[in-house]
Image 1: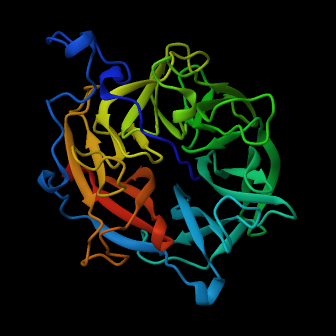
Image 2: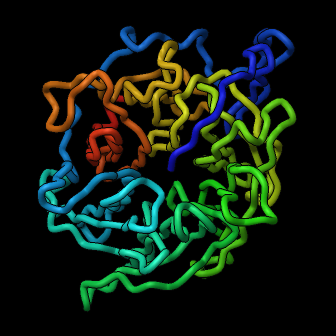
Length: 392
């Protein structure tokens, strides 16, 4: 999704809150009595951040206009399902957020090294476009939840699909979340038995809605065609028209933390203490983050992580692609690594100073973190496979 906003908020107005489930800080707080979520002082600049070693890269989908007429690609999602690695993304032969958008899928049988034929999950019809989404592999079924819209980005909603192994087709389950919701992170199971799916609420085309705010959908148990939409309000210090609420969540019991994109180069955050039913207003943190979809989670090592562009000097530049992590069991980020720089001649994909590395997604499997991302301005989808031992 695209969004343009002014960056007029002065840093003096930025509020800071601690990430999911963290205890109150015992250290002297920053000015104005605020609490930081980046733990160890100033974030280093791009050139001073260590580059992860031992990472394997591949291209999921190259730009091949001579083959498929592709003019736009964004929003990689990943899932391991019955021993195969699935990847999806949004594709368009026209412009972004227009009705010719389609949802495509490729599958790898060799740990992401090579990829099978492109399968169209949904090509839309008429004035309906279907774009990028998320996966859920659960109880031998592979679900997909995709953002969709009418005309040129009007009446956004979420459609569900189930992979039918017998027919080799994606079976549509219809609209499952309406009123502007676009999913950005796979459903995560909560301790109350429901699932939570983070995303954004886009208000274009809905006269009764205002603001493109962070939002979540909460399931009715394992009825994955029934979801309640919960929109996260903005704090008064963060004008609603400065937010493009693509968001991600981390779970810590009943406490859920939402991290969202903003127009300014800092992350917004909000928390819920009742399994995502109500939320504190989204406020700015002290964590620099380029204005792009973030992705966070918790590793089997007990570390929380966030993938995006998080450096001391990137501002809203979407490079390098970074991962920030906590120490095991801690709830504040304390270390940052570069996954790849924009200029990356040793990699299999585009290497250029202006490469836009964005819209990440991740899944842990067999001691590795699989990170999918787009090189948006080069219309390419890539995969980075990171051994967990490299980020401990």
